[in-house]
Amino acid sequence: MNLNLRQAILSNVSGHNADQLEATIDDALQKGEEKMLPGLGVFFEMLWKESEEQDRQEILQTLEKGLAE
Image 1 (tube, rainbow, N blue to C red):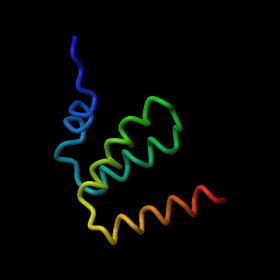
Image 2: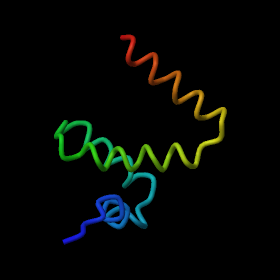
Image 3: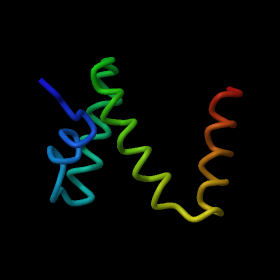
């Protein structure tokens, strides 16, 4: 069986509005379950690909700050 996890995750949230996406992200973070990490990774990948260079630099600064704490 060939499972495309990325496509399954995107299919699962396709058509969701901003509030639904926020609820999905909040739920994943609150539960802290390892199985949620791939979904968050797909969201991050999408965010990164759709971001302009200035936004990417802001994301990187935020990550750097978070890792220094």
